[in-house]
Image (cartoon, rainbow, N blue to C red):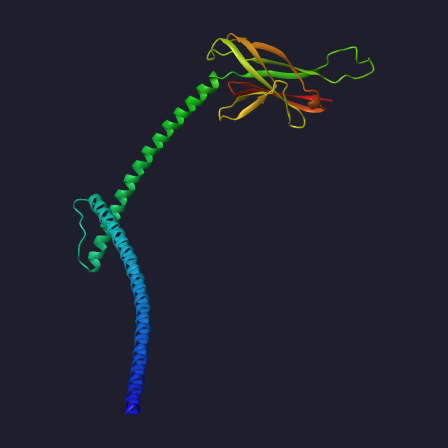
Amino acid sequence: MPTIKNNVLLIGIAITTILSVFCGYKYFTAVSENEKKSELFNAEKQILQTQLQEILVSYDKVNAENVDLKKNQAEIFENYSSLASTASPELEYTTDKSPAGKVHNLRIQNENFRNQIAELETKIERNKIKIHQIEEHNFSVEEKTVVKQLKAVNVNARGVRVLTDLYKKNKVQPIQELRVCFTLEGSEFVGIGNKKVYIQIINPNNQIVSLEKDFFEDTQGNKVVYSSKTDVAYNQKDTDVCTYVDLEKNKTIKGTYKVNLFYNSIKIGSTSYDYN
C-alpha cells in the first residue's frame, strides 16, 4: 500500500512539474511576443508620425503655392484690366474665332500697345525734366561749395639750414626746416577772420614728417596727420603767407618732398620740393 501511494505522489509531482514548466514556457513566449509586438507598434507609430509630418509639410507647400497662384492670377487680372482700360472706347475684343475676328483682336492689341508706349514716353519725358532739375541743383550746390572754399595758389617750398658752429664751411649741413609760402586767394564768399591752415610734409619714403604728431579729421572722419599749422588773418583779399616747418632729423633724406595745404579738412593747394 505505501508503495502505491508513493507512486501516485511521484506521478502527481511529475505532472505538476511538467505543467509548471509548460506554463512558464508559454508565459515566457507570450512576454517575448508582446515585447516584439510593442517594438513593432512603436516602429509603425514612428513611421506614421513621419508620414504625417511629411503630409503636413506637403500641405503647407501646396497651400503656399495656391497663395502664389492666386496672387499671380490677381496680377494677371489687374494687368488685363489695365490693358482693357487703355483700349479705345469704340474698340472691343471679339470672341469670333474666324480670321477676321483674329485680325480685329490683333488690331485692338496693337492700339493698346501704342497707348502704353505713348504713356511710357510721357513718363520718360517727365523723368528727364526731373533729372535735369536735380542735376542743376547739385551743380549749383557744388559750385557754391567750391566758391566758399579757400584756395591756395603760388605754393612753393625750399629747404632751410640753420647755421651753427658745429659745422665748418667745407662741410654741408643738412636742411632742418622747410620754408613754405603761398597765397590765399581773395573771395567775397569767404568770411573775414583768422583761417587755420594745416601744412603736411611727406618725405621721399612716403612718410609724414611731423614733430607735433597731431592730426585733424577729414570729411569722411579719417585721421590726417599734419606737420605744422598756421593762423592767417584773412580779409577777403589775396593774402601772402610764409611759414617755417621743422623737420624730423631721422626722416630728412634726399629726394622729392610733397607739400599739401589743408583748410577745413579739404586740400586747398600743394607743391613739391627736391632736396638734392
